[in-house]
Image (cartoon, rainbow, N blue to C red; front, side, top):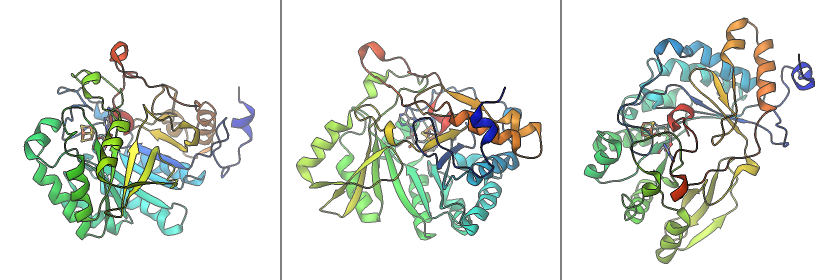
Length: 343
Ligand code: SAM
Ligand code: SF4
């Protein structure tokens, strides 16, 4: 039986959830695979999805385009590592057509940077203007330890190539207790020298990762208090539609973001949903609520069923999450890894 919402929504009706939040931001995890194994993100030995379960790039394009028709203005490709999906540039170039028409305001990527040297120029040509690169340390040994086998120089080359291609690069750094907590000042300085904004992220309890989360968790309230002893941090009222709170570092003019899902609940202004590479739509990063879009996508060549499924899914978007990490709650809040929904 159809609900009123699923039966009546016109083909270009905006997506409004039960709490009145307009959904205009879609994150797409184009693959769950990655060339690194960051200790807070993945276990060393991961079982990835069989390739047969993945949506094709054409199907991903059709799904993204349906969301864009329904008012999604910002699209972020992520993963796993988006740039290790074979032929990913064909999807990015195809999505670029929505930038050209103005339907899409921004097409961005979150990447570990390992493949950026190869793709930076093509990304820029496809209409990408900004990328977020995850970088937790500037120390090669530490980098290897955090990523289990990554090479820092490869990522730094990628970041330099992105800059040279005219892409703005924002650096994302996960704050890890006892691992990189002595590096935030030097990371901030390095970012200032190279023209990058920096966002610090608290670890979130997603998926089994071999380590104890309570050992990794460092509240950003502590980090901010420490940085405030060295720098003048002015709160910015910047609204990006994302979960970050921003300050300006007066000494450098940089923007510094704090993503604090555990110490600051950001759900009330949530405008986003997340699509996995198998076509499952997650309505909240911190909850299990999800809907399968692959079946309606494949059931017919036109988008009527898909639209109904999208409406029904938006209709169950939860109000928010309730992550907790403490001694009693060191188990993952959710079994799925960040690489499934892409963060
Ligand atoms: N591979 C790409 C990368 O690393 O940027 C994109 C996917 S990765 C899952 C997206 C972001 O999530 C990265 O900035 C990563 O550091 C962050 N991340 C992964 N697992 C996390 C966790 N458990 N808690 C907080 N952030 C996490
Ligand atoms: Fe890969 Fe990104 Fe997860 Fe690191 S954070 S393992 S680079 S998906």
